[in-house]
Structure formats: structure tokens, C-alpha cells
Length: 155
Image 1 (cartoon, rainbow, N blue to C red):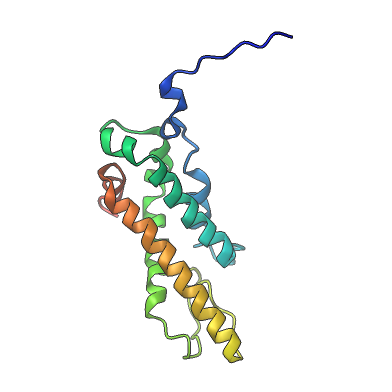
Image 2: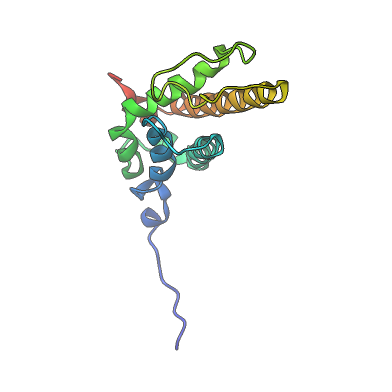
């Protein structure tokens, strides 16, 4: 077997030309809105973190490129649901963890289990804070690049 180096053009090395580059994190975030979603807090934190890391890794290309990027197409199709998830998770900053939760509509909050001890309240507050922070980071990344925030026009 001979080993030959395969030449890959620079266009194909750019992750923003891969239509699936943002699919997994965006899909996880959007699917968390579904009633009876099985996404845990950890899943959402991971999805927001992955989304932000992938966007930041391609910051130069996002700033330079004014052409439509294939990696952003999936986000464009899910922009409304993605913005609803951001709204839900950023709103966690306004929830007092020491007040018992009220009954919420599906997708409104991922923290619906009653908390009974101070440890539960502290854990819930930490989870809420971390999730809110990651959602804010993702929103900051969206606002940073025209090619991203333009996907949300009319949302």
C-alpha cells in the first residue's frame, strides 16, 4: 500500500462550508423546547458551549466573508426556535430560586421538579446561572457577526 498525500483545497478545509458544522448544537438547543424533552441541563450547557466555541473558532472567516455560508443554513431554518430557547434560558436570570416554582407551560423552563432542600435550591440556582450565562455567550456571538444576526431578521 502506498501512502499518497491527498490535496484538499482550502475551501473544503473551512468548517463553515460544511452544512453540518452547527447542526448538532443548534438541534440540541431547539429540541429542548419540545414538551417532555429529554435534554438535561448538562446537554444544554454543552450545546451552547459547542455553538459558541465553533463560532469563535471561525471568527476571522465570519468577519471576512459576506457570501452565504453553508454552515449557517441550518441555523437560518431554526432561527425562530433558537431565539425562543435563548429567551427562555436568559430569562432564568429573573427567577428567584428561593420561591417555589409555579406550573409552567411546556418548553418554558427546564427546571420543573420541585426543590425541597436548601441544597436543591442552591443546585438549581447554580444550574440556572450557568445555563443563563451560556445562553448569553451564544447570544453575544450571534450579535458579534453580521452573517449570524442577519439570520434572525423578522424573528
